[in-house]
Length: 290
Image (cartoon, rainbow, N blue to C red; front, side, top):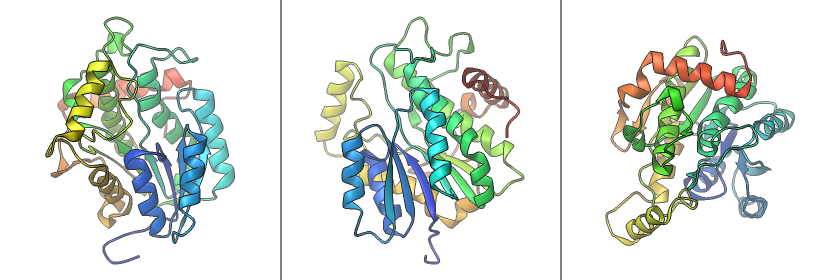
């Protein structure tokens, strides 16, 4: 550990087998941390673990499909059984579903994976974060949230589903959740911050998006000056995990320009509280946490 960096001992990171998550997991493990990577693909996870053997720290893989609440709860139990401390919880997994699909819990898929899974996993692991404090929660959001509104009367697009709008709304929810969590944890030693990784056209995020979206993403990937590299996106993630200032700074939204303000739709206290309570109902927990 140097004067300019803080190295957590145990980091839990979802969406860590590809893209910016994979790069960030390797970087943090190289600094000496144990990184518990969560992903859907067993082969990719095992490959990542094998490639990390020469690092100062280590990477361990936990296979889970975050679409179902039972799996999220089972994963939380597995993590609690495996690690006696969790210094940082990073919610990086995400998807964009081309068609409106419901999970076995009856929740629209993009909303379930991108928002409800982080919400529920944070709830399940919060006591371990408390006992490991100072601790951090980091959430991968996006500037695409500027396109979204909550529309609480139809939060899950039961009508008029649009994959890009569903993704944008899930990122709006990520930011609102982070800000509300930060306020609720104000008197603790747990910080909560989120960030925009940039437009990373080489990611697998839009693998299930409509054809026209995938074509645009592929085009952007080969045009110089368009988008952000995976390395740049990963460095933004790593900064929130290792920069000393985020030990105390909380409730922020970070972009390539630094700490910036999200939309008022995301920061509005009434929206945040309503989203929190709806989310608690959807995952069947007491909304008065933490």
